[in-house]
Length: 321
Ligand SMILES: Nc1ncnc2c1ncn2[C@@H]1O[C@H](COP(=O)(O)OP(=O)(O)OP(=O)(O)O)[C@@H](O)[C@H]1O
Ligand SMILES: [Mg+2]
Image (cartoon, rainbow, N blue to C red):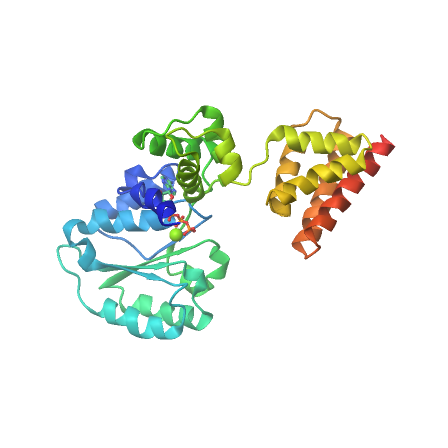
């Protein structure tokens, strides 16, 4: 787990220009830095899309050598109460900045964890200290930030990284670390990480440890990332559709025995149906069956029962076509 963090830290973008994929946002953030005037910011968007990294880059580029004197980070999920806002944040915001920039920056990472009392207290703090301190809030869902706080910030919505951009980030890490990866491996990392660059780099780190060499293969990814090879899933669907319920059930049980979670199995089954060359009507029926299984298990149905139920429904569908 410690090593897992190593590559993430090592390849954290050091400059705004190194942030991949969020080009429109980065262009505007760079303008603030050039003008040495940063408003209060709310950076919102999915996990591992460079919100925290961008906040650090803004402060580094703005304060340069005085970075550590003028920048302070609070992780709101550790310090979520009103007392943090009242005491620690105010104490820091109160003291003048050092150097040629007129304000300091406070990063409130994962701000949606702040209680609503704390968010309300922050609203006033933002206004009182506007001359001496600017705030950068990050969160995954802007709806979890109270409206009056949102309206006091310039809001930037980070996008989930595209598979191409995830592959670009991973290729860069692998090249610099002298790790050999083939295109197919990069594609599977992009698939599993689902737009989250932190997860993608974490997979490389863990796969490197598992593989004990400087080559990462698709099997390493299957192992570390709960990825099932496409053929296995398509075999299960086809076996069930052909009416062979017992064999399909044994195959799906094997996946559970291998330690895969039922929701991982279902998500990947859904993705494979999309790729299968079967008629549209069957595809729609399959998607409904798999979607229902996902819902049932998410609502608390036992994993094995939920999966067997799904397989039984697919077998029943097979008998009708
Ligand atoms: N757009 C990107 N370009 C390059 N690297 C990225 C990008 N996004 C994320 N990363 C990599 O992923 C790591 C995690 O990114 P970061 O902590 O900024 O994500 P985040 O958006 O704050 O996610 P969370 O919502 O989970 O806090 C970074 O250290 C960096 O290595
Ligand atoms: Mg973050």
